[in-house]
Length: 235
Image 1 (cartoon, rainbow, N blue to C red):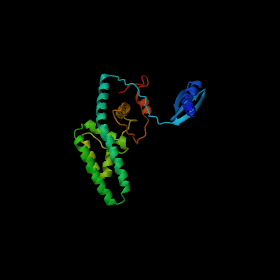
Image 2: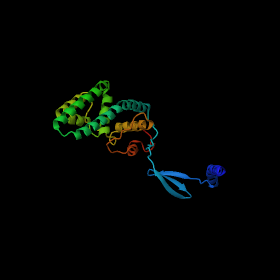
Image 3: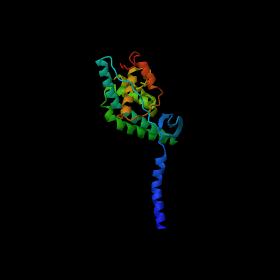
Image 4: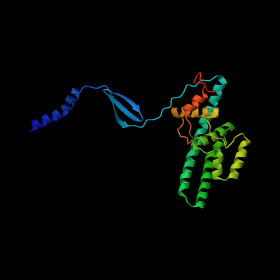
């Protein structure tokens, strides 16, 4: 009995080795399509499983027509990277506010909660925003629209009232900043360059990606703004 058990034990150990040694290795190729991985076996394809694929955007190589253009781009990049986190945070705060307000039915309670959030946001932003230059402030206004789909003017109007928004806008205009500015990379070359900067820094991991509610195709924008003879010029 003991000998039989030992025999079975060794047979159990050796059987997988024996079986796999008899299987001819098959060269398999794989490809990915529509978020499915396909294994190609002898000319046939079999979908193995659905997998989540991280989108990788192929970006054009940056080229500039002059040192001045290159310098302008680098300055815009520095300012965009600096202010983007504030626009992203503003979008997060607005999303949280709207979700909370949707659960508050009483008008008075809604107003009290809105004012509370206003003071919190102003306290969170005010000290840092005072350090921004005029151009950084305008980029921030532009990016807030990119991240929320709502202009800064409309946000102030919604959270306060139209009169306050009017004065906010006129005060900003004294410094050549319009709170009504919309992110429009289709018709504004600088806005396209801002989007280019964001995409490159999303890809490198320097900035955390936050999708925009606005609809635009970066590749279509690139085809429009880049010179057709080089496909890689940024002004």
